[in-house]
Every structure is written in C-alpha cells, then in structure tokens.
Length: 85
Image (cartoon, rainbow, N blue to C red; front, side, top):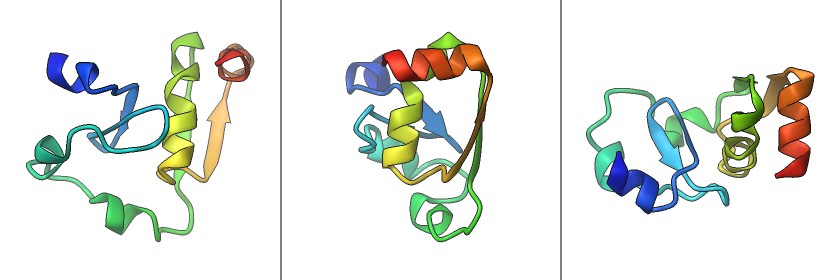
C-alpha cells in the first residue's frame, strides 16, 4: 500500500487504485485482482458511487475522470470537501 500511495493513489474502485487525474497507479497490482476490470466496468450503463465523509473529496474527481462512476451519491459534508478539492 505504501508503494501504491507513493505512486499517487487517492482511492480505489473494485480494488483498482487511481490518481486524482483518473490514471491507474498500480497496473501490476491490478492484474492480480479478482474483480471486474476497468475495461469491463466502464461500458456498464449505471456505475453508482457512494461517498461519505470529508476525506472522500479527493478520490471523487479521480473516480469520475477514470469513468468508474457516472452516478454519485454523497452527503453534504462530502460534497463540501469535493468542492474544496
């Protein structure tokens, strides 16, 4: 996890770690995950993300830029953190 964070990871979706700009930061790690791949996930019509808490403000832009999420549910505290990030 230290290496993944050092590579710029701000969050993950289905175990796929990404940077704020949406780029994958751990492709070698991704290849060992038993979960839906990014290529399989992005064509899914409804990709719902749920985020709560101010710490989620940083990962939200990356998840949106990577197209992991196209519908987002969050509380007002998270929305404020997202708008400040």
